[in-house]
Image (cartoon, rainbow, N blue to C red; front, top):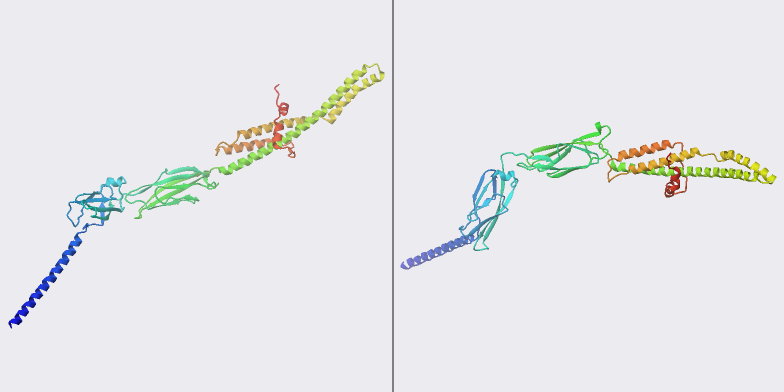
Length: 421
């Protein structure tokens, strides 16, 4: 019996030892796990999101799983005014409205801030995380669309209209801007966001003949919309005047100058023909005059001769000279009409050349091109009417340079220059 009791006592002692040993091992395992978890530096109360009302104060205390002395707190990418105590991790911010009015902070904009803590004695021991902060305001400050030009603009066809569309930003900026026009205006550069440029060049057929005063009005509207569908509209009234199509006008001017030069060349050839006719007639008359003078002189000489036959011949020869005068008028009459025509043609040529020289285009875009074209047309028409009875032909084999050389020669100029009385 005693033996049985001894055995039972030993069994209970072994069981107690085994239970104590298992409990001790479990306790040691839990302690080791807790110890291992606490060795890694971490921030234990990170708030991932802060929403702050304007003119309010934000205060938040960050904590770590270790004693604070010997650690350094810091922020990265922090918005203006957000402060963090480097020693104890106290976050502080006062949302002053002046920050938003000056544009340094924005409403409803997500600021992502990096937060970290560093062990001052162990460079390898540090912890980094981040949080976001958004500012809001219950006071509604609307945004406005502001074109960089006044409400009324005057322009002409072919001119470029170019200006920026700016925005006065309130609580919520414009996400997009829609451009609308009162009438179709063709191709233009629309405005889609703030600071975009509006560009438009009206075509030369934009203003119709039926438009009152040859002016066409266009209303352009810029409609800005925020993400909450709040809108603001800016309207610009554009008056487009009928403008000169300068490229086309320049082509017309060049064609007109070409026609004028061609007409001048024809006139120079006509003058050449008239001058040659006058010169030929003058030569024939001179020959008749010389023959008559020679006959009269010979008759006078022979009439003083002692020979009767020579005297008789001398008496006849003066009458021969008298007969030559009507023959001269019949064969080579004076070309007074041709002389007057040649003088008129030459003066017309000089006038037309002066008109061309006086109405040359100046610069890349002469504003007086229409007036100069009208002047050239008027002079050309007047000259054609003045010389309507003069037969103008262009069948010569002379070049323009040869005609100019003949027309401007000293002999011709001396012949047809006006003489002082």
